[in-house]
Image (cartoon, rainbow, N blue to C red; front, side, top):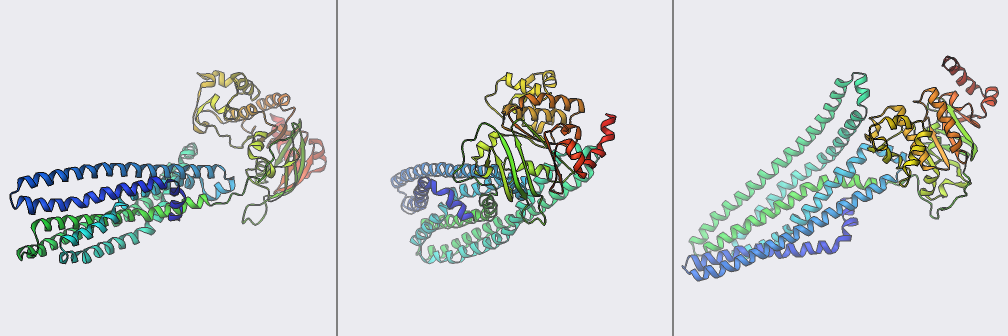
Length: 577
């Protein structure tokens, strides 16, 4: 998967990568040429006392060094550019893929894991690309060129490379082989600690309300200890690698000096040649070490690449049509024909054979016990899920045939758990319509019964809203979410238990204010309180995912036992209220 991911994204940067190879080749060639010049200075200048030769060759060395520095800077610049561009492109595609997921794919992969994959996993692969461009490209050039130059200096002494290089490769390879599964476990541990942190920060109020701080501390400590133990295991393996490299490097240098001294004593080798050979030996072994250092990063990057490709290759359950419908009649309508829905692998469907029709200017209420499938039914309209069987029709056209942007423009969803983004009251309301004027925002707030508390805020529409709307109450959050849907002016309003946090009087005023502005729209309301839906044009009653009643309040009182039970259970409370 790692190779496939790199090929998919780096092929668009072929010219930059070839420039990196070319620049690294020149820089490495200069690096390999310097020891030979140094040997000439020692053998032909220092030992003979020829100062002129020393100055001449020294000037050449200075020029070669300058070229080496310039080309090395260029290679690092273009290598970093390719690596950063690679990371940018992968993150962009991951973000585009994830935002196209339905709720089903997000639930299967998990939000904490998706965040880790877009951030940490991409960074790991990106670092591998960067290190490959700056270190790995130069390593084989240095190894091959170094061996050639070392043999040129002294052939018999170069036989040391047949021992030191394989010993280094074997020792480092054994470490890398053990690191592969460890890095795989580490990424799972990072996912887990992200999940625990996200739950604890999001549910901080619940934790404090039930005095569960000790339990949550223990849960976080367990996840943290697991990650620490895995990181320590990987760290110990990596810490073992560098002393091994230095031991082989120093042992090889000692052996070269030992045998080289005998050859110098016998007149078979010059002092300058021995110094040059030692330099080439160090360069070769250091290149092997750099290559293995990148190889150490490869296992973790491979695990991350697998996780990235899993997201990119995930088939969406909600797909765009090949020839989408781009226009709809002005009159809105919603119809469900024999709709059923089941999650993949589930033993029984969540919804089974649901049918009803709602015209513009009418209100359809959905009521039922917890877990009866009310929210799932509502999510089928904007295609957060796709029905397993049957048809969902908007303005007479199947939602599967509509252009997604057209469908979403037709629906104004107020979810069961309204979410506000960090920013201001105005920025959250304009999330539905960026071009909405302040007057339109205030009109929506008035209808949603939210204008009074917004005016009471220090900055009105410009008052800050924390992430998730945690700095406002649950009822205020619901009313702001309703106002946001009103700003959009959709053809179909979808209220998913959006009045549950409102008191009865606010609920009544809101429903009264909604009537004029929804005269040309379809209104679908999920509610738990009978008083909220009693005036609806039709009420759909669900029980265990099945449609057990459809009609007006009075009709259902006469014909639907399930609805009668719901009304009876709430009668005492509502009468008292």
